Length: 329
Image (cartoon, rainbow, N blue to C red; front, side, top):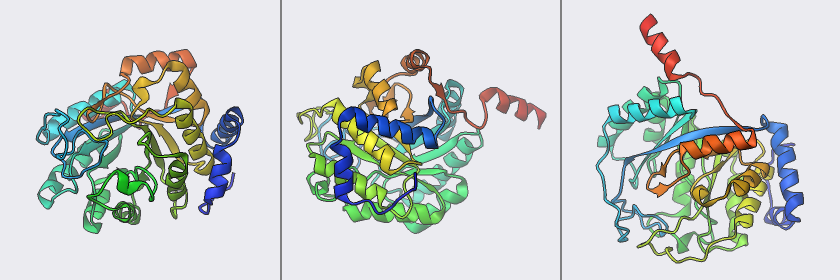
């Protein structure tokens, strides 16, 4: 399928409105044209600095604006991060993602994050960070340190965005993505469904992503995890089939992107997840926690992969191979 960057809303709407099974079938067909069947890219996400974020994202427990009972933590030591990265590699992850609850990294934080990138990269893992907004210089230095992916989600449509966040604009997010892309890094950008938005907003989000000059290499499609104390704690839950429709449409219009099951996956049944994989999802976060929200644990994922006949995409190295290399040098 030819990669397009000129998707109109009407075209995306027509995809959404197909009979569900027709949509999933088409998404799986396109998925198999572009990716190895039954193979899932597995990532691990670690919070390197938790809480007291100055942003007012209405879904987030880490915002200083809400009383979510989350206990803030200072940034964790680099050697602790490396230890966690080694465990992730040993458990089958090929990418290690590090997130900090910042509006943007201060210059005093840059030596810390750059050292972290270099050390994790040396393990043979793909590296990813989400640190908030970046300036052009910071993006360049992260690339030079070896950062593979930078995550910066658009969250929702341009039209619905002001209902969710007021402390940064939609265009602020696009500017950061431009800096990331121009620096030479890969882009990880998606959004959240179930924020109280309607289908037109989900269409708008996907259109923004699919009409970027280059599609994001990784597209997380999160389902809201309502958190007590945040403004969206009592929002009506979105039907799972609508989440899967969104995944399927994302697969069709961004055929070369990894489509990731992210937040909200812990609430899915095995059958729901199997259907999401059929709809073209081929990436997930493994581990007990996603920054601050619960996630399906590593043991459950191994059982699920065994049940469905799935395999994890391989990392560049294993912990055992790294140990042999270290001894040889």
